[in-house]
Length: 331
Ligand code: ACO
Image 1 (cartoon, rainbow, N blue to C red):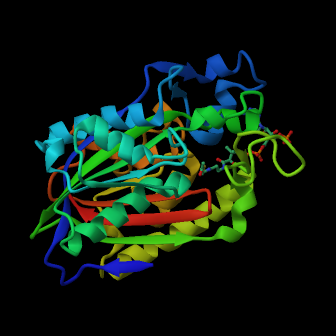
Image 2: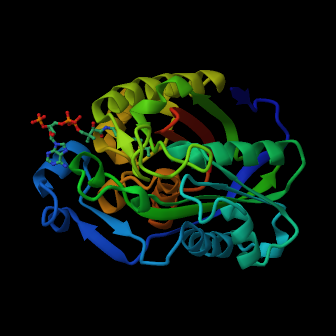
């Protein structure tokens, strides 16, 4: 599904960003104390050096709240002005109500629409795309978009092939309707046929108990298969996004990718003929935070002064489902 905004009068402009990482840091060396791995293996295969772990009792909603407060502050927007909250997560606080509803109440934004989007690591890009549609159609003027996860809650800490990859964190953006600039297009895809390459095969309807069909709430991943599929899918979506906007790859100022693996990020940068100093990399600091990763990277890029107003940004993500998506925007 793609949409081009060439003659669009209303754009969704990023008015402010925020992010939040839990206090506790787990380094690669810390991990090597209880699982058969090493800093050298993890850093060379993934680029990850450390990740943050939510404290006991600290939830996805808590992380989302702190990131959202910072984004609202940066945008100069009061929560009461929000028309909509869309929150990407695959680790909601509760089965229901949605984490977006819990967040809405905590922010004091009562009355506005609020819902979650589950697209695994593409959750934020999916949520951003949905929010953009609301703004473009005139259904909303001010929207909070969040990506928040406590992925480590479903990590098997004895499984070295997955436990080294994931971390907890959240990022948020406030979008405002603007008649001049903002999101140019978003592109979303999915391939449900590959679910067993990256999944957590438990749930309300299937059941949470260990049995032949499933074995506890934990992430399973066929790493190298996911890696190959992700690189191909991201290559294709980069081309699709540029083509939809009549742009050349050299028109992009910054690539802000999903932070799963530095080697996947480098492959996409190569496709764009982009030097790595035009790519935002934060995976070393927080590992794969799923939906949290793109807005965390975006916020870091903006707050560090790297990304400036008027620049062209390409956001992309890939995750379980499979799902993948992109957003091209003038900041
Ligand atoms: N420490 C040390 N050795 C390890 C570790 C570890 N943590 N994990 C695996 N190994 C070993 C394996 O056992 C294997 O050993 P063997 O050759 O003796 O059998 C060897 O290292 C190579 O394993 P591979 O799985 O082939 O390693 P690969 O180079 O593919 O890297 C990785 C694995 C990092 C998981 C990579 O495949 C990857 O990043 N895949 C993509 C993951 C991803 O991007 N997910 C995104 C979405 S996540 C989401 O949506 C929730």
